[in-house]
Length: 638
Ligand code: COA
Ligand code: AMP
Image (cartoon, rainbow, N blue to C red; front, top):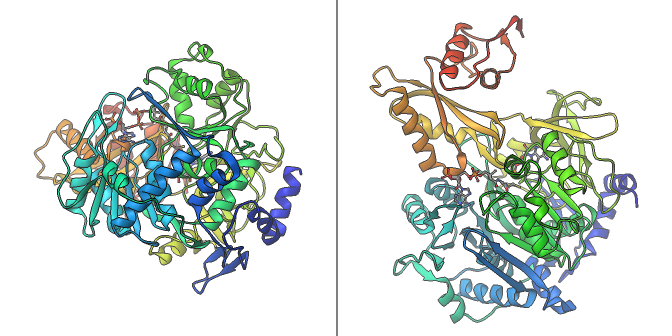
């Protein structure tokens, strides 16, 4: 079927379309209703259906004769380890850990926080939760104790699973120290921690709180899958919103499994038995969907890579993995390709490996610049497909869908709407805009299966954050436009969320941390374009009159504070001390202008500015910090 026919059917007859897709997975009990709304007005897919996501990912395949097929290849250049787990082996480990969790009192509906590095045990942990109907919440390893504590307090887990250590390129991350600090801060700490001991860094366990992972699993009896409702939560994944408090995106079981299974054939065009590799981290949604759940539900072999695109040991690492493990479809973030391109611009390292069996490279997580896309396309001589999605959607919203039909690729565009997503560009009043006019990218309700049904324990925030501004639509938070051929171009966030090396971060969170510094009177954090990471945060601060600190001291302290409170992943390296921040007459900080100044872009002084002279002071301060600090063009903007 052509893309257009399939897409049209999915929009015109959503229930018939998704009922057909739902037949592709093995239910314990078929859904009674395809789509309905609950008493709060939330859409629910596949009500009355019962299933188990871990069953679909493991047991089902073993029953179908895939037991000896590799399910997971662990490739860890940072520790010099490789290991392969068949579907049967992974199932055994999952069933045992699930038994261990049960012994600790975890039952269906209980939450389990997973704070772990990129090791097979993390995948085992997620699937073990799914097996017993517990709700996991994976927290990315690059977050600091405070961020972990905030998530613990919101999810209120019964148990926390962690490892003794993580390994970055040249340093060891002491996970248990971070967990200790987070639990000391948390108001709702879990009653038990299960610690996987890594051989290069064993941790001392706390008696009464900590359990040794291997001992717990070895002493437990394997348990079977529990039937859960299609609408029961599978996981919570916290993502950055515009305030300092992260949003707990909820994923249900039924819609998620159906959507992911559909995506593997229709979008990624990969077949059961083939190797699929998402070079991301299980701490992000890409890792949840395309390292763990989708490849396994589809019967593929997934690759879990504990390394970087460069420096482990060089910029040929990705192509080595593709060649060695026979990867047919790959997915990563543009920033990783930019890092490789910078170190191997002529592809000399790439040519040492045979990438000819790879069919597609998919990119997402941030806007992909055209030179990066072109470079990858020339290097691999394969379609390189930019596609757009969010933690909230859980699977792509815009893409090229070669499993249906490979459409011509337009560099700079994230493609056309994926089946089920009626995507519109709206103006500020909520009216759909014609082609080539930039506005807010929104999806007409209902969202297809797999997308968030709500936010954890906060349906009010769910409505307010996504559905209230433009009734009838889900507002994505991204801006963009559509061309006359129906291709969409995402131009960036319209809120205070930034994207650093494919990691979604909130400037609000960083501002809260900086504002707590005793010498800081006022602050703002903005995302500034960066050649490698897409964007990096830059802090702007004004000092209290009695501050005795030099600018250099203040900068050092603020950088250290953000690292300590938010985590190294924030990558805040630059702080500009300035006499005043530019504001409107009503006191709103003019961030857009600050970004133009910092990126050296021409801009016009807004008519709403309180004191235009502030911009010149700010430009001076920026130049002292090696930022361009552009000056205004003549003329006044409104
Ligand atoms: N646990 C602990 N710390 C982590 C971490 C993790 N899982 N991931 C990153 N960090 C730390 C890094 O060690 C680094 O710390 P440092 O400042 O002490 O060096 C910091 O966070 C920033 O890391 P990163 O953003 O990875 O920057 P980098 O300079 O080390 O590497 C890239 C740059 C482009 C190679 C890297 O960002 C990358 O591979 N990006 C791809 C991102 C991706 O896959 N995103 C998922 C969306 S699909
Ligand atoms: P996350 O929720 O962490 O996956 O981040 C989602 C955000 O990343 C989106 O709202 C976009 O701002 C950005 N993003 C993801 N994919 C793309 C893409 N292909 N093009 C442009 N921006 C993207």
